[in-house]
Amino acid sequence: MKTIHRDAFLYLTALTNLDLSLNSLSSIPTTGLSSLNQLKLTGNLQMKNVFTAKSLPKLRSES
Image (cartoon, rainbow, N blue to C red; front, side, top):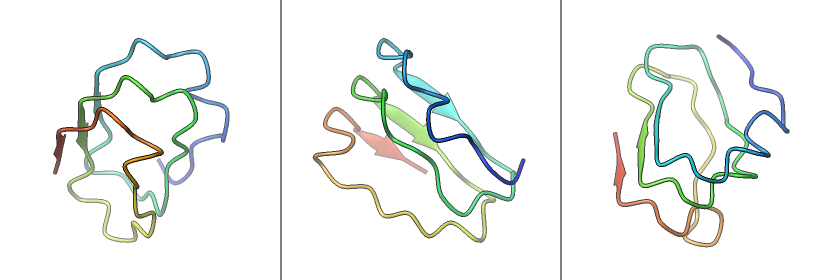
């Protein structure tokens, strides 16, 4: 997977774990991910997006 639509997570506000490992993503949209605790992005070598505490306030683990 190379891209994710900007509204892909818009209505997934209860999502707590997301594994997007081993793709070709350079960024991911954060709208709707306010409950996300764990995010896995291992293997996305082109990832540029830097997440802030404001965009993912409940994030506790990123790998």
